[in-house]
Amino acid sequence: MANGDNPLSSHSLEKQFETFRTELEESGTLRDRIRSVVSEIESTTRVMYATLLLVHQSRSIDELLEKAKSQIDVLKEKYKQLAQILGGCSGQYYRYHGDWKSETQSVVSLLTFMHWLETGSLLEHKEAEDKLGLNNSEFGLDVEDYLIGLCFMSNELPRYVVNQVTAGDYDCPRKVLKFLTDLHAAFRLLNLRNDFLRKKFDGMKYDLRKVEEVYYDVKIRGLTPNGESVGDKGVEG
Amino acid sequence: MATKPQRLHQSKLTLFLSLSVAGTNLQNSAKRARTMATSSEATNESSPMKDAFTKYAQYLNDLNDKRERVVKASRDITMNSKKVIFQVHRLSKYNRDEVLEKAEKDLAAVTDQYISRLVRELQGTDFWKLRRAYSPGIQEYVEAATFCSFCKNGTLLKLDEINNTLLPLSDPSIEPLQINILDYLLGIADLTGELMRLAIGRISDGELEFAEKICRFARDIYRELTLVVPHMDASSDMKTKMDTMLQSVMKIENACFSVRVRGSEYIPLLGSNDPSSFLVGVPDIEL
Image 1 (cartoon, one colour):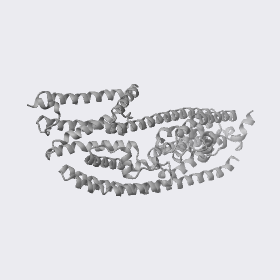
Image 2 (cartoon, chains in turn cyan, purple):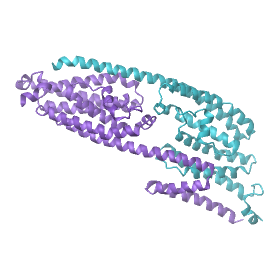
Image 3 (cartoon, helix red, strand yellow):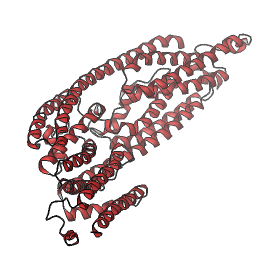
Image 4 (cartoon, chains in turn brown, green):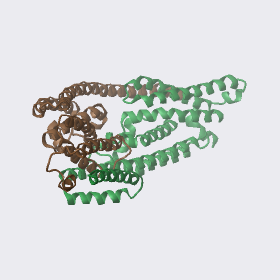
């Protein structure tokens, strides 16, 4: 009797595992589709980044921004495709999140950098979502990805400041320092866990220090434009 | 001239000072109170950047609190599922029914008390976002449930069957919490370790037939899992589990082998064991 029920149970066992295999295979196919779109996002981001790198060579910012901005629509389209791929399985955003996480963080860093170059202000989470067309509830921009993207953007700023000063823009360090100080202060409102975001945020203080040093170097040599920092003016003479 | 650099140095100093203060502060429990004070200051200043970050802070606080609650629920599930597993190990041919009855009752208590807490927390996207926080507990729960069920029915409790028992915990209006395939499979992988312990125990109790049945069962699971593992998402920890599984299966096989070979000199043990008695009949006979 004990042996009798065994083949039967082993059969139903097999059947269950067969269903699992099918389901996991489907999930794997979905993941492959996601990955192919994500790799396109990655290469678009690369094109944008290469364009933006020209700011370090003091090219006309307007021209660069225009060129880089033309890629945003491409990104928007790709994110739309991602949302469509996931459309069938709502609530599984975070199951596949790892596949587009780091690419999206780079996208955020570029968008916020561009926005800062253009307006001198911070592109907020909501605005970043709007730019990427991610404002529907199913497929959004993860807040942590956005914040990590900001940290990546901060990493760009020291180099930008150094090269701007070399090119003769002595007011740049002051602006960047103000922005980065505000950003750093704002980040300190967050209670972070011991995770990647925390690590990235911890790195931000080195960007801040570097920009402070550039500002200091420029200022101590009296290179800052006149009319700056009223309090120090008397000492100068 | 001298005041300028000094002032700048000062500002640098204050920055690093405040950084280190913030650093140590994160470690202690005063953290929450302090940040709340800062955030209210921020709204007073009402710069758009700080306003935005106050929102992100709120989001992160809520998420972390929830994660913390989920981790706690998961720990409770693990702890109490382990108790169920120990209860099943107390099984012998004399007390089978009462031991299993108690184990089932304990398992039902785990479901009602602790799994229900998870169900309340995990809604919508949380299910996948916080998976790492609750997965260990669920795996242990799957292990306990399948272990219990195998001892009672001699078959593998299916994922659908487990999920059906979870249905009443959810509010009918929302999508019910269902254990996903990955956690189920990871739980099943751990089950073999318990089966090995059980088999060794049964052999020393003379229940060779039962031990051989466990052996076949563990082998079946190992074989089926071999086919599924390559399709699993993060298969690295599953691969180590597969190695330990094979070890467990081999331990059972070797134990069965030893008893067969050496036990042949000890006829009464093997001979008296009526094949039908090991699961169904034993308690009646002994009582």
